[in-house]
Image (cartoon, rainbow, N blue to C red; front, side):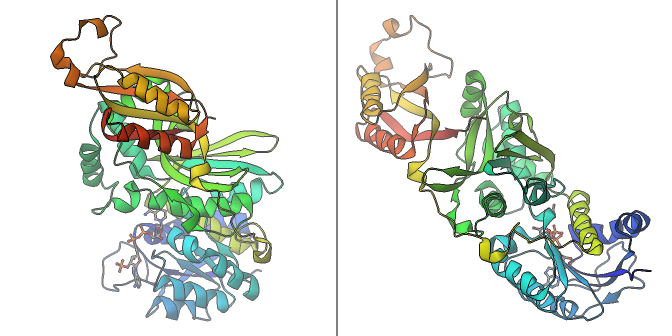
Length: 446
Ligand code: NAP
């Protein structure tokens, strides 16, 4: 008879409480699948007195996360407190040093200290599992690390933040502003009181850094991720995207290029027909392009207690089975330093929206500046000031007053370089034929 796997859980919040429930409710299933009973024997959180609606009668309350990590009676330490600092970091380090296996959903900890923690796991013989850290219930980590272990990966990209996708979906479907949709997301509990970590793209960047390491066998390097958020997106961009056959998503993209590995998070136009474009609301998705394999897209809930706990419990089941896989898919000494591709060398199509002065010569000036950077235009839409496309007879009927009017001009470029686009737009701004900052959204082809 194999001894039960004794689990200690630090953190009993949205995810931790649900992990305790799922282990209890699925005890027979887990024993049948792993060949071993899985038992929560000790827990800890900030407040012992808090009402939690959990059956913790036969469970020890450890006096701190570190005490739990050092408790010789547990085999597997589950960290569900969050944060890249204390107490999560010291507790996870201690558990690994003690030769225990660690399961965590903490993307911040892994993005910052992942390689060091993987090394500790390797040195002391424990597993370090973190399926829930990216895409919650979507098996993103296992797919890259195990399912595609024999496949060379060219690109991974995805919608990795439900808050942003919810906001962009509402903006598109209801023509609402970013601020209105953010307020609704906060009311519904999809966004934090301080939403900047999500809407500025940093949450996506942490997850992308982990995925890039798994995809390309490089050390996790959050600082190598270029990040832009969604707060500058306007309903008119989403309307234009629709007319041009695109949809706007906040994507995290990691791709191997001639100049190194690009890791970037930014609002992105994706073809409306693509799998990723169909993903609406708080749902997450990940597409993986591998050598000789048609693109694989995984779609599912990227957050929520039950969804996240299901991934945590699956990691605990792997520990019960005795599975030991290198956390980032290869031994730490075989992880290469990330060769960061400079963002200025990024090449792709661009959507550009300008507020142009309705004066003779404006179009010619813009065209000249783009041509100087060898930027070719795939399509151009000039709109009436009220937003409708300009009718063919419009130009001839202008009166003198219209000369000072601002006209939105929307351009779609063929593949060109980031550097060229920035230089061309800086020159156009200098020429004073536009007002305000140009809106620039990169296009990602499938
Ligand atoms: P949460 O609801 O805020 O719960 C955090 C838990 O940690 C609470 O039980 C809290 O104790 C405990 N805790 C915090 N600081 C502590 C300390 N200094 N000492 C002891 N315990 C401490 O967080 P969560 O949403 O469950 O998230 C947990 C982890 O899962 C995070 O890494 C998060 O990024 C990740 N994750 C969450 C989701 C999601 O949908 N929620 C999805 C994917 C990944 P009290 O209960 O006493 O306050």
